[in-house]
Amino acid sequence: MTALSINAERLLGRIRELGQIGRDEDARLVRLAASDADKAGRDAFVAWIGDAGLEVAVDRIGNIFGIWKDGANAGRAPILLGSHIDTVINAGIYDGCYGVLSGLEVIETLKAAGYTPARPIAVAAFTNEEGVRYAPDMMGSLVFAGGLSVEAALATVGTDGTVLGAELERIGYAGPEEPSFLKPHAYVELHIEQGPVLEREGVSIGAVENLQGISWQRVTVDGDANHAGTTPMSMRRDAGHAAACVVTFLRDCARASNTPTVATVGCMSFEPNAINVIPSRATFTVDLRDPDEQRLQAAEAALAAYLKELAIAEEVTISVERLARFEPVTFDRKIVELVEAAARKRGLASKRMTSGAGHDAQMIARIAPSAMIFVPSLGGVSHNPREHTPDADLVAGANILLDVVTCLTAQ
Image (cartoon, rainbow, N blue to C red; front, side, top):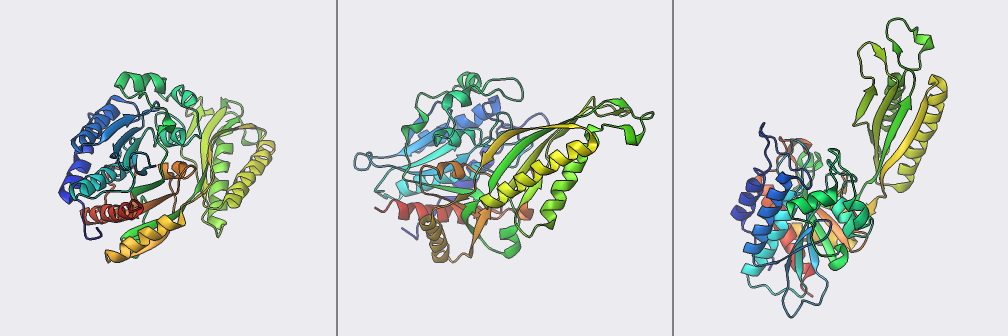
């Protein structure tokens, strides 16, 4: 079976077709979770599942599954493949979608070849991986893995005031299945790297062995609004200045460290947000990531200590809200080795890697042996319409997934 290859034309055609679903009036790809655009993307995916002759299942959080099983293996736990098809605002066409469509392509290729897997194979499109409209991100896979109750997830209020459960009902994807209805034997997720390492080093395949821990917090600084021209600098309680100090502190700490810790302030707003008024309130987010749990905890502690010092020094009040917290994940060693072995047999260079981004695989790893396969992202660009991976790399990654799945379903 190692000589078998996926249908490149079918895979690439579907990636491009899905990439045109959800374009707004400015031609931006915006397929937010449970939106009308998401419904259109889901409908296309479900149609392709049906065309492949697979069983379609949808659970209560809206995760979609295409399942290939027969009487001989129906009682066994399946190999699960997949990712997500929701996007950020003004997205590229590969993030998530590549893994979902490659999983479907692998199943279709094996079916067409007359392969008889020893256990079922399923492909999943998980709901709300991006977390743009509803928080937290990776919600569908988190609920599927038992890390968040389906009731709490469905009650989530979005950035536009909508409720996720009601929106899933509206678009027809509030499924009947409990999220725990399918218990995977193993999970493999194929994904673009979303970083520059593979391209820079001339490596075709990333064998992802671990994934960074993620800490998201919202920080609110309260000071006093006052006239920008008449208030002396020494008499200000400037929430905006205090926020800027935190941004600088985080950047300086991360750059001075010899570790992979990264820190980002991605959102910030001021009140009253007027050019001639000292801000009375600054609200911003902090994203801390590290593949080592102790280092991540140390970064969180350093931030907490600095916020206490800053509140005293600037005479402001600072409060912190935890938005999300995920520990680092170590992927299954045997599956990682299968990825490396498949690359060698195909004559492709591979590299063990850490994922800097969050993925559905980190949630599924709670309940089943899991791993990821990366292919290069040109320039390391993602979450951007310039996101691109050459066709040859897309096909190569799908063939590695095919080989790994063949090994995992051989017995």
